[in-house]
Image 1 (cartoon, one colour):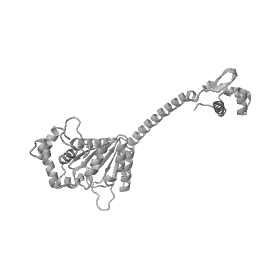
Image 2 (cartoon, rainbow, N blue to C red):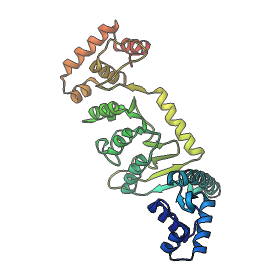
Image 3 (cartoon, rainbow, N blue to C red):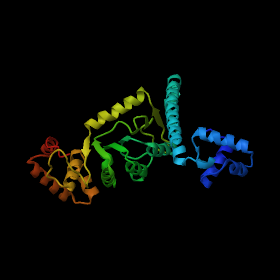
Image 4 (tube, helix red, strand yellow):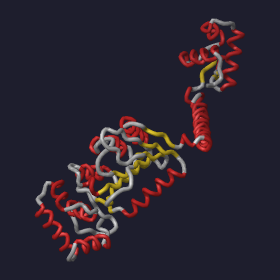
Length: 321
């Protein structure tokens, strides 16, 4: 790092261990002539790692003083070089994409390849993952997606839109509530046009064939930076704006406006507004249908509403969700 030769490095190490030494002693330890030892010491003084002390003896400059600033400069140089390499690599990839359209889209021909890519994308996510989750899993059940929990723990932002039919599947409401508790932002719509995952607005993963039946392997596409990716991002944002927010069973809260509902009531309201049927809510929450209907009536009383439509309108106006 300092540009020292082997003799100069050995001499510096000897001075560090000894504290200080005369030229003759240093020459003996280095098994060289006094003349060569003196030349070595002169080079070390020029490099700022040795100094002459009283009585013609030589001492080392403290390592943190002699080496610390050089380490900082070396690290800055390495960081600059790494940034330059990353910039060049991105320019190279952009050039390849312009010249070779095949590099924009990578086809994943099997369920195993799709599952591996779903895991890899979430493991490598740095800022945000956005998803369309349709009813009926293709790659793996939602409860097996442990990569999302790990990514949420790293601070990755998740925005997920669920089909209402998916929320009616056994165990899904509890699974969604747990994800929201960990930081996921969830919304629901009646139907989604496609399954999709977008990671860091840089790559999207979606099936090429929506309804492969029987034993047919699903085929998916990995879409990288392009106008097509921008269109997929716009598709998600459009659906997100129209979707209904889902609040968690635990920890649901409204920060801008006071809300008279507790966490359980807020969760029930979000499911109602999302269009989940009473029977499905009762089944998922382990309640009787009559209990669910009684709690819905209680919400209507709190809102001063005569119908469920009025309840939804009041909840939107008061920003309960």
